[in-house]
Image (cartoon, rainbow, N blue to C red; front, side, top):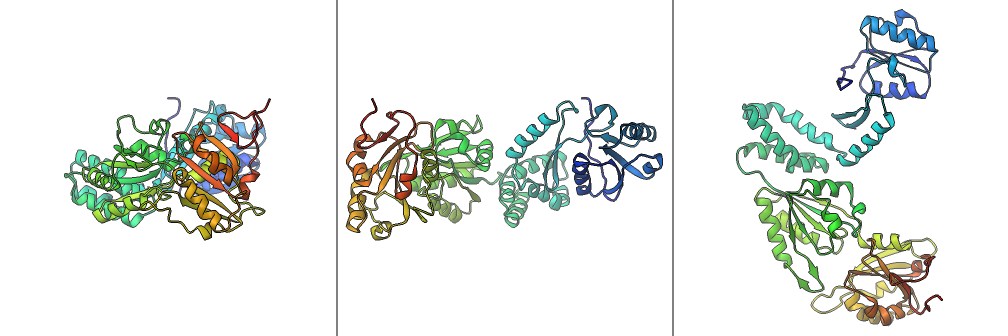
Length: 450
């Protein structure tokens, strides 16, 4: 290790800035943020170092930078000359800041750009409110030491708190609830820890469309309860040793009834597990996440919702459809094609209004009934539309045509994947494929190219 990493206390202390330019200003901004007082100069004289805690140089004359380094070395004052490792007794790392949590990344001055890239990866992996977790330790540190005088017991408790319910609540910005959970856990120290459930949206299927919060949840879960629509590529982002429980559904074929899923989540949490309920799309958009959240609330189980990219957004983006457009659609409506007690219970009059884009989830089995209801209310049979299967994944397939054409040909075209129907004038703005039509993309009524 070429450099010893350390954090300096500079609050109220003087720092010399020698020179000028953007590089020096960037250093000055970091130093001011740490509470230091700036003393600026263009040319170097030895008396400038009187009372100085450290010195930084950039954009000055070469002889002044060399003299600064020599004088600081003689007095034992840390000095950094930007981009001149041979004139430095300390280097400034790439910094990740989360309130009181500070992380520094250094390559020993050999590759500052690499340090920045590493910093970006760490930034993506850490919750924006991680500092709120540290605040719990600061606020209740004395109480923890008093209640748990044994160092091993104290460490074990803090590890559970900083990876469990209090931390998850703090990271979600629910600080009062986090403090309550922390104190409750402290009262039960030595007993089985409380569990926590996250209702996580997996997005439309592509692993790189997961949110950063969803990725962190998968990396920390003890158990993952997942649907059929969650592909292996997403499940592979989880902890390797996490238990996986499949509870998928397929058009009225329920592997586990919803009531059973609710009970399972409660039981796992009561065992002290960190549970991720992983759903395709967004848990609160036709995912029955609201029912699961209600069951968890009723059972007194701490939980949070992690939104996902819902199917309409993922499918439309990949197909090039602008869901809203000032010339074609000023309103977006999301509906489910699932029946309730065998009836497609929709407000067809509202759905038939012009100037909107209509996205119908899970509607293949009721496409005929949807068509009849819309036409009865005056909807134009020639409205452009698109059926999209396995949307948002590399296997996305599209069938383009008018509403009437999609109803006529859709059933024969559809495979066994989830299908979304998008209707409206905005669909007509999607670009036609620039390559010959294939099984993956088709336009109803268009002959195969020669």
